[in-house]
Image 1 (tube, rainbow, N blue to C red):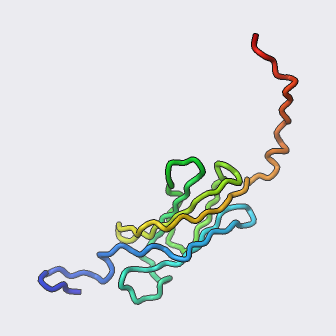
Image 2 (cartoon, helix red, strand yellow):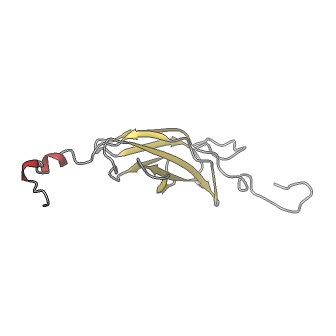
Image 3 (cartoon, rainbow, N blue to C red):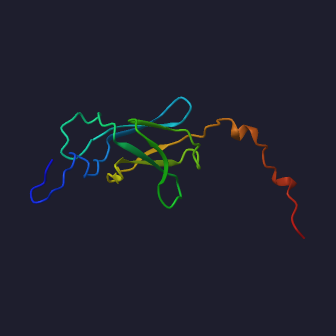
Length: 140
């Protein structure tokens, strides 16, 4: 593509950041892991099918309760991602966000998607001994 008034030649779509992923959903699999899925919006002005864009990667972010902000947990070229990390606070809400990345340019971050991650070991509490207050000695 030739831009009037310049001698520069560009390939369509390479000078623009990709659009943010859409239709982001998160669910739990049988192991209690968060499974994210989304659609790729492609590039601004693109007429190709949104899900067909192999040059776009996706950055997956997670924000745990009490953390200052989201952290990167993965990078994928697929339209899905499984977070196998255990929750910091089992049962508390965890936020996930995505960004599309292409040629060093990123889309805006998606709106946070919230899910409560259960403890990945359901018998943890049963394995701990009960706390007996009668055996606590006071300092003199």
